Amino acid sequence: MEKNTSKIVTTESILSEFIFELLRWANPDRKKQDEKLNACAVDFIKLLTKDNNLKIKCVKPKREKKIDEKKRIDICADVDYTNTDKKYLIIIENKTLTGEHSKQLKNYEEWGKKEDRKLICIYLKTGTESKYSTENIKNKYPNWTYINRRALINFLKKYNIEKKFYADFLENLEAQEKAEKAFKTKNIKDWDYFCRVGFFHYLDSSEKFEKCFWEHQYGKRPKLRWLDLEKGYLQIEKKKQWDLYFKICVPNKTEREMVKDELHKKLEAKAKEFKLEDKEIIQVSSKDKFMAFAIVEGKYWLGDENKILNVDDVIDKLKKYEKFFKSLL
Image (tube, rainbow, N blue to C red; front, side, top):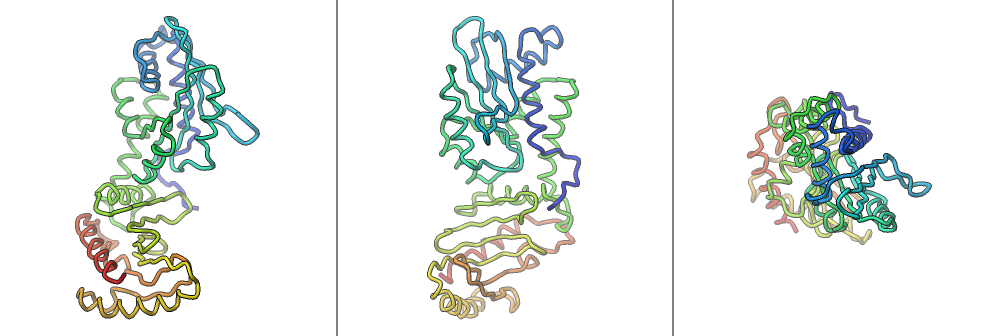
């Protein structure tokens, strides 16, 4: 399990604690204690509900709302108003470095619909994930509003709040954003978790890699792949070193050896055509359905690990290998 050696806090409990406290500050009786923080909290609820004309009577947030023996909602809040009979139930699912799983959002939404309130569902993601994962959440759960870290930072920075819980949380979010950009300024060998996430996010955002998908969680190898999963695709993976894998889907076990041999023959011929170095493409064997048949070591496409990454050069090299890979299929 990789340890987070930075001072950045990424636990979901910290995120939930902050949101819970901020929602409490939306209550009218808090205005006397800190008018600016109260206004911020009220605006936060307006942001969530997209309802700007209502005067809050009371907000009752709850943490870890238990809806059955196994399911707990991170944050839910009842919101009542003085100038209308409208009542809201806000459900917030907080995510830092993990993603949605086990039909969480579907289950929480179904529970919320049974309550006698207008339901507002919020997916709050402060970690960085692939565009594919983001769009998948939005398409799969259209009744959920997706709020990412940048949107949250932009909202919180509008208010000059000095309360420690607020200032510390905002500082932590901005530190995480800065840490993810550090892959551009650190030697490759010194990259930590946040640098690797930033690197993958940069490649993903470049829009030069079709059907791009990546994931990286603590304790798991960082992986980024692109092209067609059911035909053939390229995959970047960090084990002891950074490698670029050439993979192809071969469902029939009896055909895998034959397919591998054919691809290896093509590799040798095409490598000369593309003017690749003798040891640049390493032939490998795999018996998996998604069969790896070649590897390019990081020194060829990523560069010297003792130096700072040349991002544009890496993208050009990856596109060159993509063209080479397509010529084999």
